[in-house]
Each structure stands twice: as C-alpha cells, then as structure tokens.
Amino acid sequence: MPTTEIGQLSESFDTVHYLDMSDKTRLCLTERVPPRADPRFERPTREHALRLARETFQRGERVDMQTLAAELGVVRSTLYRWVGDREQLLADVLATFSDATWDEALSGARGSGAERAFDAMERFMRLTAHYEPMRTFAQREPALALRVVMSRERTPAQHVSEQLTRIVLECTGAPLTDELRDAIELASAVASAFQWANVAAGLGVEIERGALAMRRLIEPALDQARTAA
Image (cartoon, rainbow, N blue to C red; front, side, top):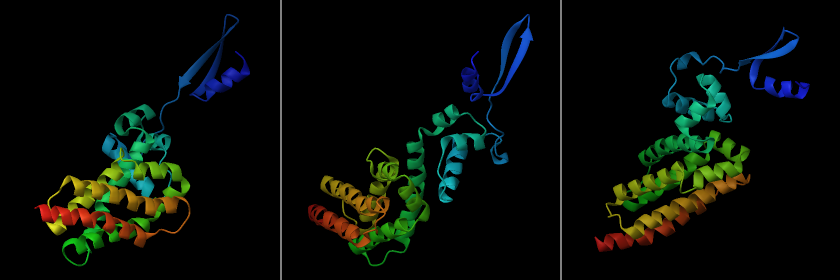
C-alpha cells in the first residue's frame, strides 16, 4: 500500500499494525474511539449536550461539535442526532439566555402600561448588548451570528418575538390583533438589526435608535388594538 494511503488511513484510526504472513503484508487497523468522557457525563444525554454547550458559550469559547462530542464521550453522529447541526445548537443556547434576560428586563422596568413595556424592551437590548459571550461570538463569527439571531426560522428570533408579545400584552391588557402581532414581529427584527449588525461589524450598538424604532412600530398597532377592543 502506498505511503500516502497509509497516512490517510492513520488519520481515521488510532493504530496501524503490519503483520508479515506468508510473504504477504497485512494491515491491521484499530478503529478510533471517542476519548473518555468527562466524569460528569457517565450516561450522556441531549440535556448534557445542551448544558455543556451553554457552559462553553458562557466562557466565550467557540462551540465546536467535535470537542463537545469528545467531552461527552459520544461520536459526532450521536451529538448531531440529539441537537441538530451547530447552527441549531447555537440557536437553542441563545434562546435559553434570551428568555432569562427578558424576565430580568421586565422585573426592572419602570412606569406602567405601555411605557413599562417599552422600558422593558430597551432594558432587554441593553442587557444583551453588554453580554460579553454574545459580543465575542458576533465578532468572531459575524455571518453565523446574524443568521442565528435574526433568521425567522431560528429559535432566538422566535423567542424574542414571543417574549415581546407577552410583555406588551401583560403591561397593556390590549388584545392581540393581527396588526399588533405583525408590528411586534417587525419591531423585534428591526431592533435586532440595529443591535447585532453593528456588533458584528465592529461598530457601536445603537440602543436608543433601536428602542425608538420599536416604539414607533408598535404604538400605532397598539392604539388600534385598544380602540377595537
């Protein structure tokens, strides 16, 4: 077997043995197995994978599928079966942080009615803008970060829209009309663009403009919903 072929094989196997038998050279390969798992994951599950990914992200480190699989002691195909591809895993990780941040933003919001809702929106933007692991991710992998955060098909954008809807309705008591739903969805997308497109480009975050855009989009639909009630 040519040396180049053996070199390629050795990348996929731990050991390469040669046995001389009857003047013929046989190649014996020992298949590579995952390294020993972290002791925390004696019986790894999908929840362990998500937890480990969140911990990795919070440390500001790159969430790498091969590294996660090795720490869990599973093959990559198992990890992909549990969590989907890397983009979906990152989306699920960010959605978890987003939900917790909305709760914090609402608990510290000032005012009442619609003003409390708008203050919570701005607080959410400020909290997430200063979340260092997210800023690191957006600057290290800007294209991926924007896809994960802003795509309507991904979990973070859905969660932001859902949580913003919840807060507007809780604070105002207005009914959820189709127009209000659409306005909130558009407002959350515009605010995310003001925030994360700038971070990804290495520019300053425009919190005030993003918050103003959200207010201008939501207020007319909110007034209409109240009038129709």
